[in-house]
Amino acid sequence: MKLEQDPKLIKAIELLKVPADRNPQAAARGRARFLAQAATLAPAVSTGKKQRLMGWMTVSRKGKITMNAVIAVVVAIVMLLGGSATVYAAQDDLPTEALYPVKIFTEDAQLWMNTNAEVEVDMLMALVEKRVQEMVAMTALGVVPPAEAAQRLNLHIENALQTAAEMDDAAMQGALLKIQTSLQTQQQVMTILQTQSSGETSQLMAQIQTMLETRIRMVDSGIVDPQGFRNTVRAELQPQGAPTDAGNGPGPQGSGTGSGKGNAGEGGENQGEGGGDPLHTPTGGGNPDPVKTPGPKGPGGSGGNKP
Amino acid sequence: MKSVVPNEAELLHLAHQFDRQALAQIYDLFSPGLFRYALRLLGDQTQAEECVADTFSRFLVALKKSKGPQSHLQAYLYRTAHNWVIDSYRAKTEIPVELDENFAVAGPGPEEQAGLHIRQEQVRCALRKLTPDQQQVIILKYLEGWENEQVARALDKPIGAVKSLQHRALTSLQRYMEKE
Image 1 (cartoon, rainbow over the protein chains, first blue to last red):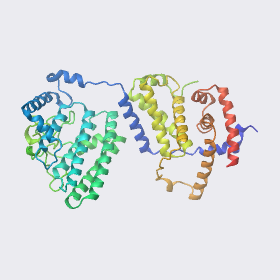
Image 2 (tube, chains in turn cyan, brown):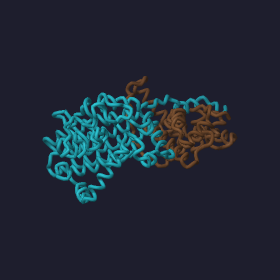
Image 3 (cartoon, chains in turn orange, red):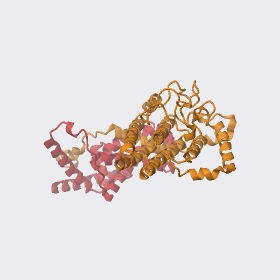
């Protein structure tokens, strides 16, 4: 008998013909990664430069362009007046130190001057890492990190998620993968930090851990279901009644005023209205976002979102 | 040979331009089959996913370098996946195996499952002793149900060579399985 027709041999081979049940989540993740990589490798079609060149004549993504010129001038004046040394000196300051508001101001200004959504996500995740490192440093010094530090950390993450939600599916999935990696790393740092701390610090770390877990879950589901993610961001992170098209224009009540409690003296940290939980994010009222939602006067406008 | 993709030329043309929809369509068309193929060879879900991911990643890199396939996409992808599998055999890296949550829910009892698993592993071991081309012929022909012509495309060999490979593969496989 020909081997090709040997039933025993064929049956043995066909033992491997078992149904290959693929984990749908793993499959979706694989698809998302593939499309994200495709978006990264795709020939760049950038409109950013064009928008920059058009300056005042164009309202850019989020209407930032015109404000960029204002901020650039302000920053330049501050530098010329001898502020550069101060700005430089402030970069290593911790939230409890005097020049910290200057550090926050420069970060916000840098974010304002950027018009590229993907770069913005990268910048925000770098700031998330910076905030966590500040907490590590403070804990090492035996200082309890202030609640504002945790709030700012939360705001950076929320801003990154909102920025991602405005992208198209492929770009969003790419951005979410970056956010996911970053948040998982910070979560590991927080776990270590929590085990090494006690009392108030430990309590704050636990709250941050919970917040990170929630955001990681949100990101995980966003990678699989981009539209669901947009809906979640709209429902959970964007202020009620805010315009959803541009997403960042001043709302009917001049959003960007946050809860009205932003403290200019502390670099625009928004206190929110959450009372005991520093990470409570109000879903109604003004957007606590110091960066993304300019008030009627833009950065530094009402609400103290900018120093 | 008629392509397995109805509009393959157009799809590939768009893929070369990094058209998102075309790339998504390609992934949706071929990733289930590639996963099944890799799983049958590797016997591990995590590694099979890794193989699929890397296959498509290599495909994108090839497109970027304008070196991607101009036709016979399916054959190209299976060839790439197979190379990955062979490389993984050579590297012999132990990738941590994730626990299958559905393991306990499966139909047959634990003893039957274990027996089946052992027999499958014996066949897989015998299969791994074949040359890479022989393995590919057996899998594509007997497990994926491909025609000789399709297998020839995937292996980039004439049909006659494929038939001869198949015969040698079966002879060797029978010998190895008798030894097991």
